[in-house]
Length: 247
Image 1 (cartoon, rainbow, N blue to C red):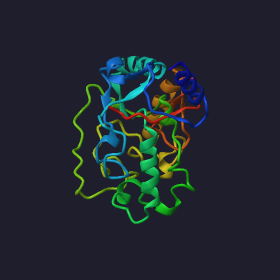
Image 2 (cartoon, rainbow, N blue to C red):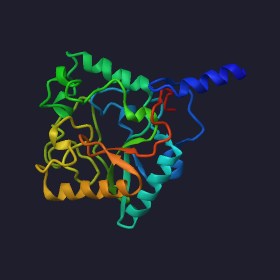
Image 3 (cartoon, rainbow, N blue to C red):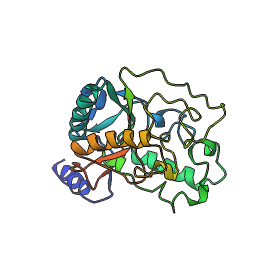
């Protein structure tokens, strides 16, 4: 048994090796921030695949304890302004990333194109950096988030058969989200999703800046192509990609 544990310890340190057991320092974010709003998109159908993603067995936000503690500090500051974090995704199993890759290679599956990537040729998703074979989410300290008023207002109900509207359209013309206006919807494969894009309106830029400033203050770095994507700078597992399911 000691030999097996030693081997597991060695493998865990190898960059890119996927660990199938959840470490003890992962937590359910709702136990740390019960006031946060959760909209775990990959558990349902309202995402760019149009179906539940492999590895999501429950609509939970699992995340490393250091990242959860940092987010709790962000939430505390937001609530002074009657705002709250809204969580789209946290830890993402490697099997989910593999599902993304299979979907991206299936060029004929374009049922969500009208909403999530209306101006992008699906054949270019890898080249343009929208899909990759590894994701920082699988390391457990990355979150996809936005801001909502607190308490959060009702959100539009997503119906798979409904007409889709491009994610980069003005807030009144795209899917009825309950968040403050960030200029695009979540997982919008479009240049307007880049945090520094000056083509979005002044209020939308201010909203992005508020989120980015608070996240930066509490230790998170923003990804330069997605306003919603943040990774803890001092993440505890910088080289390990986990594959245990979200449940």
